[in-house]
Amino acid sequence: MLSRTKTQAAGIAFLSRAGHLLMHLRSHQPGLTMPDMWDIIGGVMEGSETPAEAAIREAEEEIGERVSTLEEFGTYESRTVRLYVFTAWLDKPAEKLVLGEGVALAFLSLRQLSELRSYPGRTCWCTT
Image (cartoon, rainbow, N blue to C red; front, top):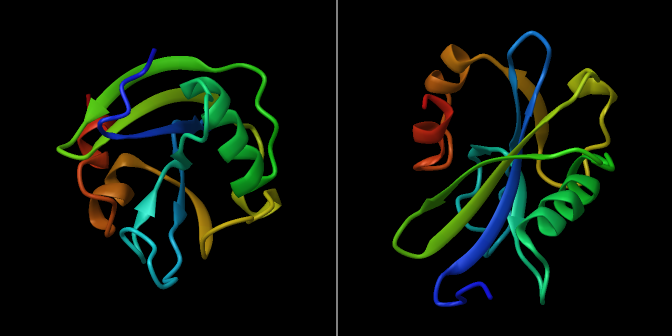
């Protein structure tokens, strides 16, 4: 059973065959954590979801993609959040995805990512 003392979240680091990472720009909604930051596709786990189930649901909600194959990448923790990260290949241009949440989607190189305003702590696992 997963500990619920920290917020449990799950996300997918979608990779293109060119080695770029799909990121979405979070919107500036009232009450949204870390608005106007770039982040991977993902979010908070709901109810009794497993991390993989949450990641798959979030991908469908945020970019309209049903993911069938995930690989575990790692678990990362801050003082308040435990983030389960998975990887998956995505061979579709960002402009062909359905933007269900956020402001924009883009496949970014690690260099591009390092130059953008991203969710604190997220870039650490991108470079491991």
